[in-house]
Image 1 (tube, rainbow, N blue to C red):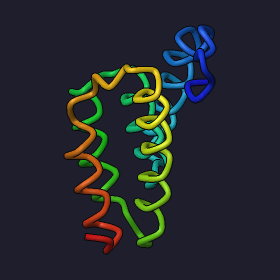
Image 2 (cartoon, rainbow, N blue to C red):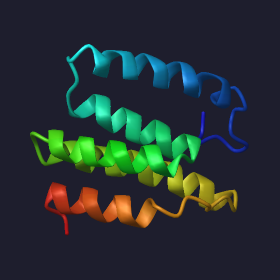
Image 3 (cartoon, one colour):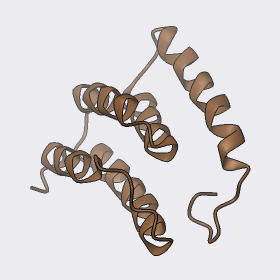
Image 4 (tube, rainbow, N blue to C red):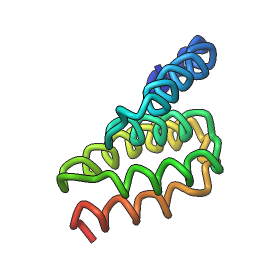
Length: 108
């Protein structure tokens, strides 16, 4: 929905719903890397830098395989590229997030 041009406006309606669902799973104690990576991606979509920073740290701590952060990095790059095409490059943490994910994936 974010990658479309123009982006689907309904994405803003479902972001809080999906975020809530993932947070509920995390609170049940069954979380893994993908839960934190999903919360990171949702925070980037919501342009919530505080939540993105928190969930990046949690995701990095939960990495089991190097391809996990590599996959998240790919997803975040797609979001960033779509926003850049629309001249919406306003998420200042992207470079930091990209760097840390690359490092954890062994790409740096």
